[in-house]
Each structure stands twice: as C-alpha cells, then as structure tokens.
Figure 1 (cartoon, rainbow, N blue to C red):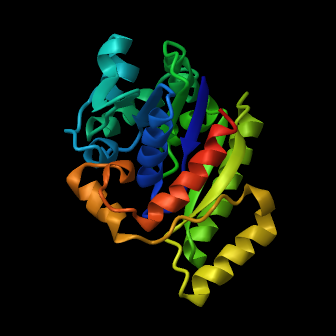
Figure 2: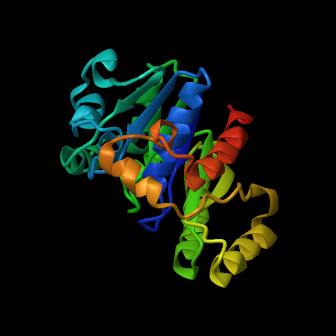
Figure 3: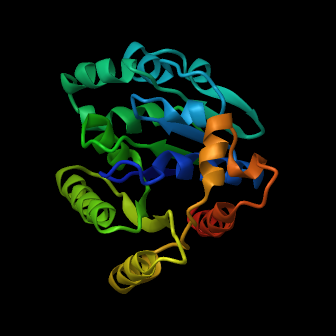
Length: 246
C-alpha cells in the first residue's frame, strides 16, 4: 500500500482535480484505489458525480465500520471516503485527542488498497498535518504564477516541520505544474524557475483546459470525457510518474 498526500497551502491549484484524475487513472490501470477527502467542501464526491457525505467524520470520530465508510464510485477499483461540513466538527473533536496527528495514519491501517490518495484542504490544520504524517509521499500541484508557487515553498516548510516534530517518513514525490498555458511567457518563465530549483521533482505540466471544469461540473473524470482533452495528456504523463513510486 502506498499513501500519497496531495496538498498545497494555496487554493485553486487543482488539488482535487489532480486527486480524482490520478486516482481514477491508477484504478483504470488495475490498482485498487481509495481517495480520501479531507476538505469540508466535499469536492471529491462532487467531481465524481456523487453526493457529499459524513463518511470522514463517521470514520475518524464515531468509529463506523471500515467497509461501510469507503463508498463505491461506480468505477472499477475506485472508492472514496466523502466529506462535508461535519469535517469542521471533526477538527474540533480531534483537537482534544491524544496523538491527534496520528488520527489518519491509525485509521488507514484497516485498509489494504494498492494506492490511497489524501486530498487536503488549503488550510494548515490538524487534518493537513495528519495527512502528512500518514503519507509515504507528497504531491504538490501548483498554478504557474508567482503567488501559487509561494505555496510550494510554504508546503515544503510544513513538510519539514512535520518531519521534525513527528515520526513521519513522508517525502516529496513531485510538483505538478497545473493550468499551464503554452502561449504565455509567464507560464514558461515560472515552469523554467521550478525546473531550475527542483529539477527532476517537477512533473510534466498539465495544460489549462476548460474540459477540466466541464468534467467536474458533470461529475466525470478526464478519462470519461469524449474529447481528447489537453489536460489528459499532462495527467497521463503524471500518472506514469506516479506508477513508478507505488
């Protein structure tokens, strides 16, 4: 089992889009995949055409049976643990627990999926920290603009802090440049800066593509869209990279 946390302290950088498409892509390649939504907005369920749910709260706080918590998505090999506004209550409840940073890691011991993806909120909170403690690898999606790339630096500082303060073995797997626009100089410049600073840790860029918004709106992944979306090319290349660390 490999656990991958997808996080960035900046919002709007395609964290959930990356989690859902990489998760479904890995499932289509034959891996059993579980995507865990750690955000109160419940976007993972939305992106897959499902209703939000309190699965995360039931799993971590009320101790609901493991197999009842993971929801089938109607896609072979792919299940999710949904979240909704009860996740805010979860954070309050977890804040009073002993060893609260281990809450996700301990709960995941009941699962035997090949790949578990943790989709994090942009805020730094107990679930954000717990996801880093639980994970083997960290993936950081980032838009190719100055402010979003600052989020990469902040995220790496958070990872370093968690590694120092806990027994986390989480390592940086890569940085996914998202919303890449090949016709703008800003995208080229920021991609070059990332490559110079992080070298092979920069994964193939994912093109800015309206098909991502359409897919999210209709509850499908890019692999289910009828068009050969530009973003699908980038996520295919990123999926190839992901398969090498599983």
